[in-house]
Length: 330
Image (cartoon, rainbow, N blue to C red; front, top):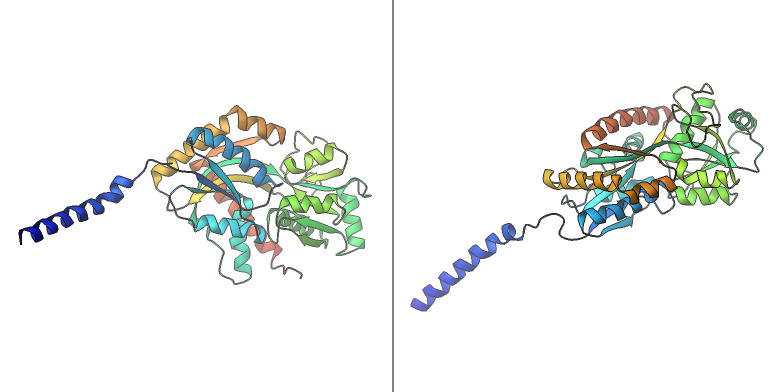
């Protein structure tokens, strides 16, 4: 009987110890590597921005920040993976403006959204650049007027590549085509890198892209820029007019990049990540990387980024409705 009491007492103490393990095991964030989901393949804005940012964040966090390219469905696969990840700060997302487009496009097709925007919480805006319309240098079009005139003569024959159906590069071109009253042939890929490869390989005739991706090719004489989707000309392309200058209304589009986490991530962890990204963006290492890409840093902390995101999302939702339902050709 005495032995039994001792055993029960020992078991009770062990139960209390086990019950207390979660509290003892609560680690100060981060206690192990962080994964940065990039929903596009290498070669595009998200990957080009995400990799140097991850490297700079590692130095602040004292933990590895591993870039994971989860591609597919114009970025929806990776963004959904991040939105549905465990909200503990160990999964972060490097997203582009298409984060706001995909749920709206899903509505057009009456399908269950891959994710909802309220599943994700903003940490920081990193960059915000207008897209640029480029064509191979050997093409005859010297201006947007040349391009539009030819497209009107040959409806559906001039092709363009993109990062996927309703992705950033696709939406920019559809806004232009809609404003110009022309019909182009869309050839989707799973990211900006493959879309650029298709253009340089002569498989398509045009591309809307972030400046950082196309400027090296423009400087090398392989591509010609016809116009930009911004509200003013890019300093790096001072001779390239904006669509607004050319009389196109509502043809304005920016490829911005920003960091997000699952919305239920604890406030203290989010605060740590915000401070980490702020320090990383201010580092000489990251600034040098962005300078080489000729992409200006447009850092906004979470509260300001949320306002920016809300405004941009409303504009993109209206654009998606205007463009309407587009079926992907098999």
